[in-house]
Image (tube, rainbow, N blue to C red; front, side, top):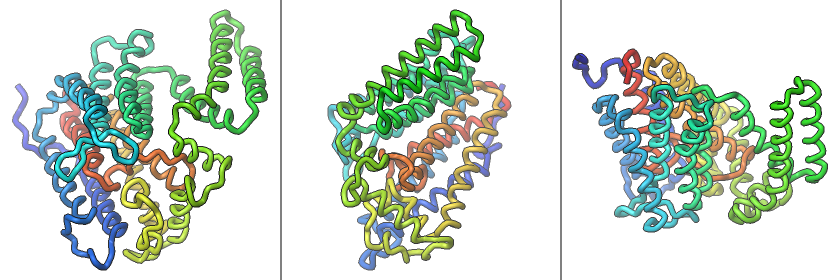
Length: 419
């Protein structure tokens, strides 16, 4: 019989501390991003920082409530939770409100709830539940197909909401499959494909195909010429060639115009400093002007005069860079890295396979958001509109990330037990 434990028994306070540090950092920078002399009170529900304070209080209560729940609940009801949020991300397509071109929001009073954010957490639970099922081997095609369907079905539904950024985030869960035993060439392929796509947009396709053919011939020359390997190389070459010649169709027919423009600006195919490239240009100016120590709290001119659109949400890192400089930006990055490392370390200590795989899912989702968000503010990646975890303005993202993390913290408090 399991002994009775208090709510804070064996809670990882390091993770909780990092979480609180990031949330407080977020609120301070949201305050700075929207501050003006007519609205300066800390509690002002007409302003984003006032609303964010309410979101933070609700998030803390949500985290506390998660710590009360028996950790076995999340494994036993993983598929139910997955189906529940799957239903809502489908429903929102038909009855949701459109914001910034994405029809993925439920209007509740004066606020909006984005179920896609919670679907990421639900997908982590369902994937961890499936992978921890007895004798599941993801190297077997049938098991791999099921695991991919669990991941890609919500991604496809979110994509139909015209929320490409959130849809792409689900791809990060390939890291969980790799931890479960998926061969390394699969994640490697996911890294190679974007590189190949970029080259297909920049280089003549016939020349690129010839280069791919040389790589295939080189692989056959250095690898033992077994029939299975020869067939695999041929299939990969044909698939790569088809992918190269399909890029133009994908970019022109699937992506929205603003997304195509952002990619072209990033690749230098289009110069539009007042249009598609405006956000990134202003972002780089803001971060660069912060120099080493920053301009100081509420002293950022790019921030104060609203030169950067969406500065409290997608481009919140600009405020940190301008007002806190290189030092402040580095501290924030170190906090995130400490968070990821701590989650992975704790996940590896789990006796329960479910908790271990879920931990990798948490780290994957958070890391992907972190890397993409900061990458787009620095002009290294296309602007796809995903928040910086715990820091960007918004109730849905903060609550979903809080649930995502605190479910893991709850699992971790029982790390020596099978869940």
